Length: 250
Image (cartoon, rainbow, N blue to C red; front, side, top):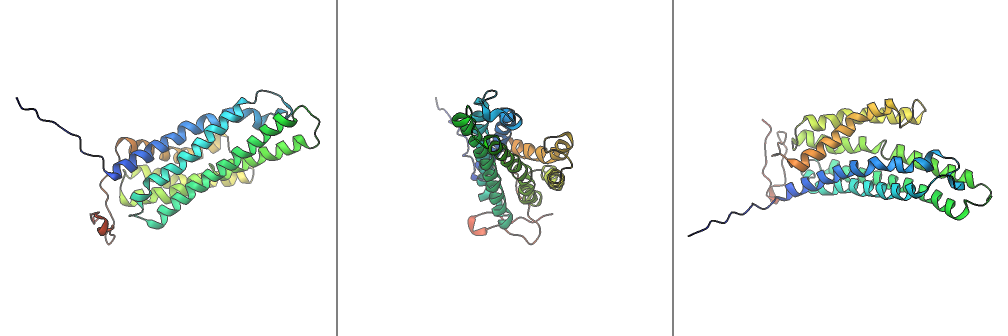
């Protein structure tokens, strides 16, 4: 009796890149959501540095924020080899903006860890300027939250979403959300900068919703479906030497 062995075709490099990027995108959501609740005590309790309330949330919040930053970089690093064929400058910009966003998150984490250290070392003393120093460090966290997660996702979308919209690697409605959401998020962050409303407010949430939907949608699509067959605009060509076909937009 003969048997026929069936083997699954190996996953292409583009599919692997899309899967990795999609999982990283989902990771940014999973890790970022718990961070703010964990930081609530240090951010909103002025007596935290003097020993009021629990302090374990700072450490957990720091871990989640670091993971958010690293998965953010991962989204760009994973797709760069694919998207650079359809927009070299914007692909580099996407990697750079994601890295800058992660850097601002790290700044915020380090500022709150510094408050945690002050609490541990000096919280039971009457050290001069302790509360003032803690307040300044919390302010650094607030500003890094505005400049990082409040601004950089719009820059990310202007780089990444425009490439996806042009190449049609994903359905066009997904990057359209990013292109629409980018100016809305920038407008909201500017309004927060000038005191129109808080970054964590109903208005800010509504204006950030399109960009959040874009990131979640592209993450899910890349994870489940991968990239579609690319379609380039007329006159554009991919790197023939790399073996990628030249496609013409109908």
